[in-house]
Image 1 (cartoon, rainbow, N blue to C red):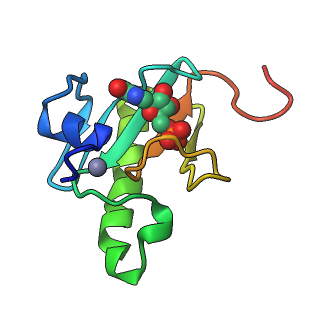
Image 2: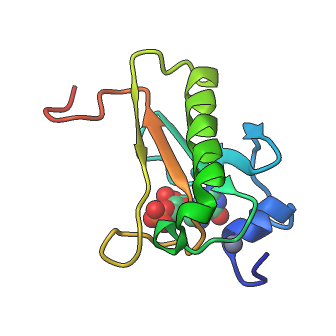
Image 3: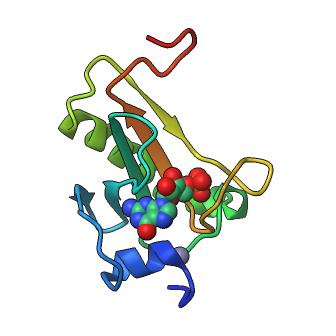
Length: 114
Ligand code: 5GP
Ligand code: ZN
């Protein structure tokens, strides 16, 4: 836990979020500024700044995060497909410094839109 980390505070329950999925490794909740009809964040309970801070020691956790993303997509009824995004670091557009997966769906996410 990092005391000044937004997602650590959500994991700890000190900042509220509507939990959609939780297991021993991670928690999933809706993004506060959704970019699609379904936009869920999957966050490890362990504080890791970004994907760039992970290595082979984190293989199990990273697998659990992806499996949780698939579970969330099933729970949200995204049977037509969805997009999973991990923004990483400054150039990756990451704005919250706690590793997270975006699960986006409910509309066509590719190009052209529609
Ligand atoms: P990033 O840009 O780091 O990949 O994604 C961070 C995401 O966190 C953004 O999509 C943003 O809307 C979301 N976010 C920021 N603050 C909060 C919050 O307090 N609650 C929730 N549920 N999402 C947040
Ligand atoms: Zn954190």
